Image (cartoon, helix red, strand yellow):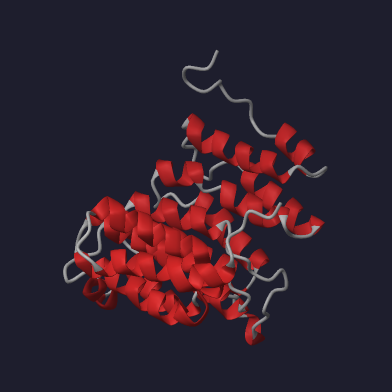
Length: 277
């Protein structure tokens, strides 16, 4: 038996009721619940009211309540309307436009992290490849930004794992290096470099290998082998925190292909994680 509600009922009764909550003076927890409900319904199922819902969602960050702002940042992406991409990128980058969206002042670290996940989910739900490249560009820029908080960098690295970039590289003339956002292979190359970037904290570098592994897993054998080789390569200047070595091994484990096993076997032996039995 199909338990899904009648689409006409959603448009006629459910969406209007949820919009009343969003635009009313309800408790933050109630507003957050209604926000996520509309996001999960999605733009397509909202029919002709999708534009009205989008406008209501985009107005939420200005309310100032942290719970509502964080929920809105994620919901804007889940809702699936490409028009929300600019707002989400502004929140991730803590730009002047992003600060205006939250009513002035800096965008909080938590809001930036939620916006990163929201932006990635928007790219995942959108068939427009330009949205995917736009998303990857802004997430990469946030990781590379000077003095970016670790929480923002980690959120962007994790979010990049679900951005559906093309496997084919966009080759630029004159030997100019392609941007990480141009293709899956270019992004994996950039991610492998971040895993070894001594300017990043150990916490970020330890968690970074999962994303290139997941992108390489969706590529061809050559890309998987390149990612495996990069992840098992020892750090350049000898910092030997166990987390920095276990992280790449976990990444290689995700690849699950024949070329990964020999490369992983050549990596140095590690002590067990602290507290392991």
